[in-house]
Image 1: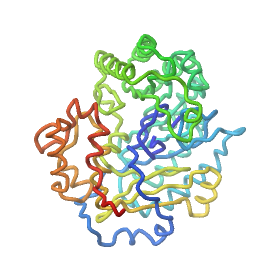
Image 2: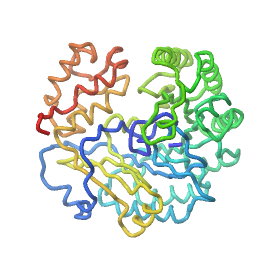
Image 3: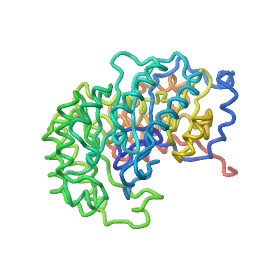
Image 4: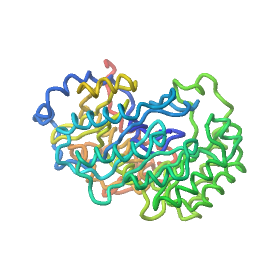
Length: 434
C-alpha cells in the first residue's frame, strides 16, 4: 500500500510515509496544456526570488494492489490477473524523458517507489526501472532508494532480489501484527506473514521501515501494546505509525467501523511515544520515529519543502524555478496514464502556486517536523521574505503554539498536539467576495 500519498499528500493510514502534506484544495489545477509551452515559460520573470533551487527527489507510483483496502484513498487499483509491467515501465520511461527539461542537470537525493503495492512488480522490473532512472537522472552518491512492500506479496528471495536490483531501503506495510485487526481493516496478509516479511527485511536491508496503524476497529490499549511489542522486537531503524481515519470515497466512509474514541486514541498516541522513546526511536515527524542515521531522507525533503518530480499514474510533483513554484499531476487511471505517457502527454494538470498561498503551503509541511526548521529556510524555499510570516509567527508564539525566538520555527508541545490549528493560522486571508 501507498503517500501523498503517491507523492500526493501526507501519509494516510495504511501507507508508508511517501508524500508531503496535502494543501487544502482552493481551486482546481489548470489543464496541462500550459506545460507544453516549454521550460522557458516557467523561467520567465515573476514575483518570487528563489536564491537557489531546493534539493530534488523522485517519486515513482506503481498503482496496482492485490486488493483495495477499505480505508485507502490512494490512487490504487486491484490488479486483474497480472499487472502490465513491461508497458507500464515503458510509460514511466517516456514520462521521465518528457519531464527532463524541467529538472535538467539537477542531482537527485532520493527515489521513492510507492503505490499501490510496488512489491507486486518483479525484481527484474524494479531493476529495469532503476536502470532507466540512472540513465536519465544524476543520482547523488549514496542516494536513498526506497521501495514499499506488503507482507501479502512476500517471498523470501524476492526481498533480497530487490536489494540486488538497487533498492537501499524497504518500507513494509504491516499495519498490525494481530490477525483480528488485520481482518478488521481488510488486509490480505496475516500476522505470521507480517512477522516473516519484517524478519526478512531486517536481514536483507541495512535500513527498513515498519508501517503500523493505531485506533483500529475495536482496538484496546493492551492490543496496541502487543503490536508495539511485536514491532519493536525486530529493532527497526524506522517506524511509521498512523491513526486510522475514515477518508472520503472509501468503503469505510460509507460503512464506518466502530473506532476508539478521541480520549482512547490520545492515550494510544502517548503510549506510542513512550514505547518508541524507550526503544531508542526518536519522534522526528508527526507520524515517524527513527534511530540516529535512519531518518527517511525522501520524507524529510517533502517536509522541508524540497522539490519532487512525480511520475506514474496519479503522481503529484512540486518543482521550483527562480521566480515560481509549480505543482503537477499525472493522469490517475493506469490505462489512461500509459496511453498519455507513451504519446508524450503524461501530465494531466498543473498550477503555479500563488504567492499568497506559499506561506501556508510551506508551513503545512515544515511544522510537521519535531525539531522545526530554520527561519531562513522559508525564504530559501518560497522566494519570499521572512517578514511575510513574522506577524503570524508572533501570534502563534503568543498562543503558546510556537517556541519563542525567530531563529527556528519549532512547534511547542502544545503546538504539536494542536498542529492543525497551528498550520491553519498561516492560511491566506480571503475577502468575503471570494
